[in-house]
Amino acid sequence: MQFDVLDAEANRLGECPIWCERTERLWWVDVLTPALWSHDPATEICLSHPISARRLGSIALRQAGGLLLACENGLFSYDPETGEQAFLIDPEPGRAGHRKNDGRTDPDGNFWIGTLQEDAYSSVGSLYRVTPDRSVSVEATNLAIPNSLAFDPERSRVYYADTRAYTIWYREFAAPDSDRKVFAKTTAPARPDGSCIDAEGHLWNAEYAGGRVVRYAPSGEISMTIDLPVSHPTCCCFGGADFQTLYVTSAIEPLTTDQMTSEPFAGKVLALKVGISGRAEFRTRI
Image 1 (cartoon, rainbow, N blue to C red):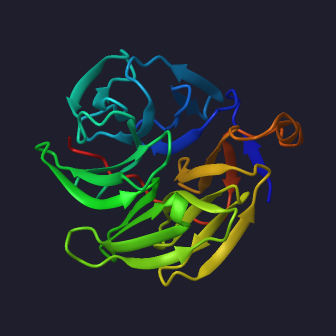
Image 2 (image 1 turned 60 degrees about the horizontal axis):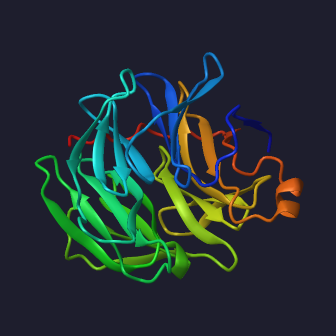
């Protein structure tokens, strides 16, 4: 499949691409730098935006405008025009060695965020839900690397994964006590990383160390695979004026020097025309 490569520097760990239909811009993060990036397709310009908060794990669009930044030391509002940041809440305060990872907004404007212990990747991470009034609930525990957050409103599903467990689950997002069910499993070395939902309710997942994105039907069956020129894709989203461009972030780490030589697009953001439409991201009301 043909693809374009965005003109931004290679990311150590690119993650969480999100398309803003208001500004017609793509946003994403480099977790390990950390850095916040944007791309304007009209000008082809990519910009790195200074941030003061530490360890940026994921972002979300805010209903009030601007972005929500999920950082090691809490959730912050961010104004792209002024660069101003303001602390909102830390759903997991005082957890030394923990950082925020994948995050997503549900149809009700709540922000869901996973946390992990970065040094050992022990199964001590959690998944939290933060409501517009900033109350916090625990939605899942005993996760090593919470990932793959995505919401399907037609089926009332939340999807999430533990990358280290090679498993994606789903459950009813409005029913905390509902049993989670296995949706899909990957085979080593491919691990489930970030996901998005298309207009038909199919889940797209980037397989870290698997070198591809996979489209799953709501039944969990694979309906499409797309091989990529990078071995470590990290997340995906639909964007563009018609939501028919699939953007895929990727990572340089943990590639060796020889692997980086053989993968010139590692760490880059790829743009693919897949012939399928996506949908706008839900906006958090936090």
